[in-house]
Length: 469
Image 1 (cartoon, helix red, strand yellow):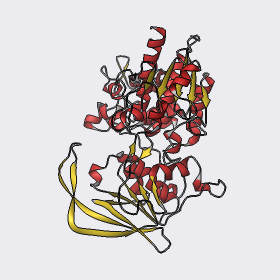
Image 2: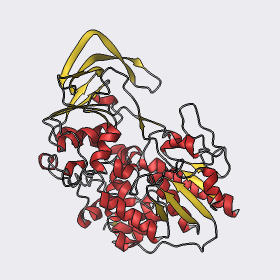
Image 3: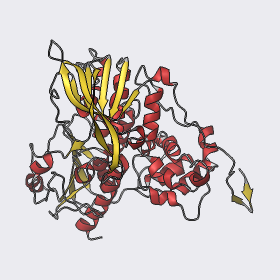
Image 4: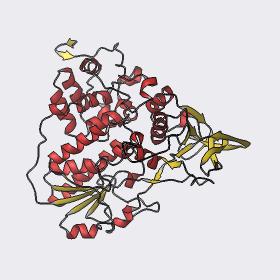
């Protein structure tokens, strides 16, 4: 370890440690994790690239403000347990965030080393530690304060809020509509990006802290907000997510084997349709699959279709690759696995075969015009340029709308015109002072780490409100 006047100095010539990935041709045939994670040797080499900046912009880029230079310094010193404890002061889900956070736009995007070369692989180092939970200290728990909080939804925002509240001495119950915990982490993100065992490990850790989980419990049906308050809860945190699909609004959208991405991914990720008939959830294994969209969900869907045996797995997007909102790593992985990218097309109509199932999709060819409100150039139809693409499975992945159960939960929460909950950006408190909300049901579809940040802020606000701290 290079030292100058007793102080560590990074080697500015050392290249970024490459990711430890499975060969693309092999991994595209099954659901094994794409990335195997850093070995200890790789983690130590990468930790030595950190400049340990006096003003760490990487921390500013992290939505939960993890002390990144400190945990990397602890890795250098081989104090892996201490490094994991440092992360857990601010984030209870390092094994998850290390895998699915868009670090390139957050912590790594702010890394000083990235200005002239490549940023430190902060996400890989976080995952390296998160995959060694046995090294962490037992979380410090405040004495029980006698207050009860209900958390609605066990996705990243809900479980983050629950964990923070449990540490602060609250009696926390999480109500989850599905039969298992994790929300979008289990139904939305495929096994090859985030193994379900990793999510279960994090849920188990929360149960060890005293958090109670009530599964198959749809708040809004089994109980309203007022009924939860009558049962003795002092506050509610709503984190139901935004799982209602957006429609393409084109003819043939309701044909058999035209799926919404949420349905398709839920069948495979949560209900193990890829292992039918071992598990009793079937799904169509198409040979020619077209996915419409350009975000991470579209990438997850098309890469899943490839693993289910698609000979042609196409991602069709109305703009070009450069405008796709997905992570660059996801696009790179998809193309390496054999996914075909079809830019500048928009669906016009799904065509049925003689059996009534989808057999093709007509698409309108586009060109890019002037920028729209997002700053991206607007796709404009090319008159008369229409093509027909054969497909036996088509998947729509163009976004989501607000979960309608937000309205059914009741209370005095204000919803905006799109059905999302109106909540204070800094505290998460809604227009009902007894109810807080955060994650996608407030912001619309966003990232795991932003949802976690909302859960953390809400937990701090609930603590202050109920305990006067």
